[in-house]
Every structure is written in structure tokens, then in C-alpha cells.
Amino acid sequence: MRITDLPELNAADLAEHDVVAVDHDTGNGIETRRMTVADLLVMTIGGSAEDNAARHNMVYRGKALGASVTSEQWAAIKAGTFKDLYLGDYWSIGGVDYLIAAFNYWLSCGNTACTTNHLLVVPRDSMYTAGMNSSNITTGGYVGSEMYKTGLAQAKTTINNAFGSAHILNHRQYLVNAVTNGAPDGTDWYDSTVELMNENMVYGGRQFSPMPSGATHPWDTCRNYTMDKSQLPLFHFAPWLICNRSWYWLRDVASAAGFAHVDRDGLASGYCASTAGGVRPVVGIC
Image (cartoon, rainbow, N blue to C red; front, top):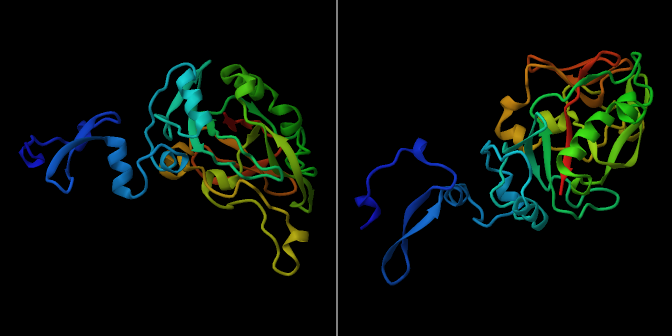
């Protein structure tokens, strides 16, 4: 039987693990072979059908993965195949949906290179609310903020309990530690586990944070340098997940008095540092 002899199937009927029939010319005649929908998708848009970070960074699925990471899933992450894990898939642990947002996002980056296969997760909603500082200042940048010093402690504890501290990726991150006249002018490398996202990770570019002045050297006027320079694939393929109808903080300095945030209606904006806003961090698991 040839494919043209088979009954029609609506695309809406196909699931990730369904198998489709493909006619293949072996050189000695036509054979009908099977292929998973996922492999067919990858080969249709170009690339390899093998499991790897590149392939999994371009497929959104949004599947519920259960209440814990299985041993098979940990093995797939460690090996860098990420088999049967896709963007938007999520684990529901302790009342928090952890969405897969990227695969090997930080690999090879850092003043000490990250060499560990990993995936990034972000909670679907804010985990709680807190201010960036107790007053409306951004003097020490993100690193000098109360959010960085103590405000993420609750999130770190919850995330460690969810995945196990041994599976939390510790990597090097370049963060703002000084601000003058509302513009970042100090940065350095830090060990990093759980952090707020920045504007690039969410939007794919700077929206509200200051940019260097063209009048002088940008290294001296506005040190907005970041390792997190590209949009998370999750938000590229599923932009509706950026806005969760409850505003949350980003780590970028927006002015002398406030930091950037994603507004409840989806606007890219900034707000006074002392206001209690959502804490929606990003973390690598490995």
C-alpha cells in the first residue's frame, strides 16, 4: 500500500508521539516507512532529526510532565539529548508550574565557561511579591539591591526543594553592581543560580533600560553588558507566556529610582524600586 492509498488524517489529530507513514526511495524501489511527528517537523523545517539542544529549542509543545523530574529525564538533560523534553513542557511541583524555557542557553558562556548540559525553567506565574529595595533607589544596581541580597532567598529554597540542590546549575553571570544618574556604570562576574530575568531574555532586546550615550565611549557611560543577550526560545515561540496578568520584576536598572518590569497588561515598563512586584526568576537545571 502506498501513502496515497491511506485514509486522510487531519493535522489536529496528530500528537507528539504519533507515527506517520513516509514513502522512501531506497534506490531499489519505494518502501513505506514510519516517522514520528516530532522528527517529521524537524526535517520539514530543516535540520537534524537527532535529539539535541538546537532541535529542542525550536519546538514548542506545552506538555504536563508530572510532579517530579524522572530519572530518564535527568539522564537526557545530562547527556544533552533532551529526549522527549520541549519548550513549554512543565513540571507541577509544590503548586508551581516550571516551564521549560531554553536548552543549553548558557553553554560555553562565562569568564569560566559553562560546560554542563542544562535547560532553563521559569515559573508560569510569579512565586511571590517583593520590592527591589526598601526605598526608591538603584544605586548599587541589581547586585546592590535587597532583591539580590535577600529577596530571592524564598525562591531559591522553593526551587532547591523542587529539583534538588545538586541539580541546580551554578554558572558565572555578568551583573550590574553600580549606577550613576540612573545608568549602570559598574559590572562584574558572579556565581549565579537563581536570578531575575532581564529584558533581553523576555523581549529579545532592550525596551526600558538606559542605553549608552553616543557622545562618549559606551564602556564608560552605560555598562549594560550582559551574557543574557538573546530572547528565551519559549518566549519567541509562545509570546503569550510573557504576560501572565500580574506584573513582575526584571533585573535591569531603568532609572535612578526604579527597575524594569513586565506590566500586568504586557507593557515593557519600569517601576519604583520599593513597590512590591512579582518575583518570576529563571534557573538552570542539570
